[in-house]
Amino acid sequence: MTEQRPEQFVSEPIVPVAGTFDASTMGRGEPGLPQRFVWRGDEYRVSEVLAVWKTSSPDTTGEVYLRRHWWEVRTDTGHVMKLYFERQKNRKNAKARWFVYTVR
Image 1: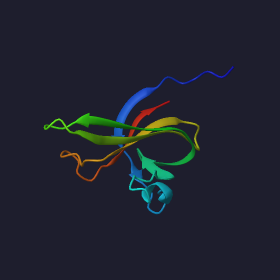
Image 2 (image 1 turned 60 degrees about the vertical axis):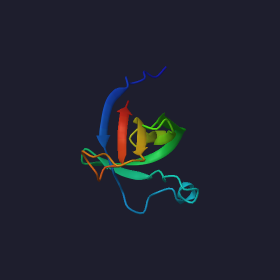
Image 3 (image 1 turned 60 degrees about the horizontal axis):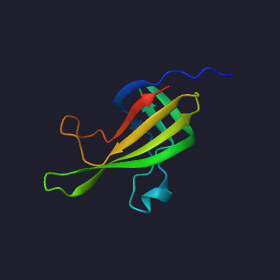
Image 4 (image 1 turned 135 degrees about the vertical axis):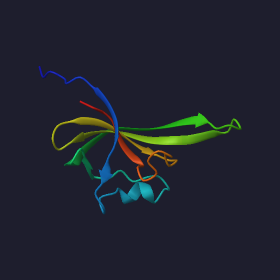
């Protein structure tokens, strides 16, 4: 029986490697999951997508707005990470749209 690592909250930006985005989802108007990305100076490769989902919340007028696209992935290093794409740019870090939320 393998011991599962505990999930650690991170919520830090990642830098997608150019040219590695999933073009099939981009064709539907959704963000394409980068197949490779850099986090904390190390490059990771997505080896398996375990789950995909979206989260929404109401805006100031009460309209429901799609906020984030989520993926749970396994990387080539064996880490399981929850990644998300922020649909609306963050005022604190306008360039960051991709994040690692948790890692185990």
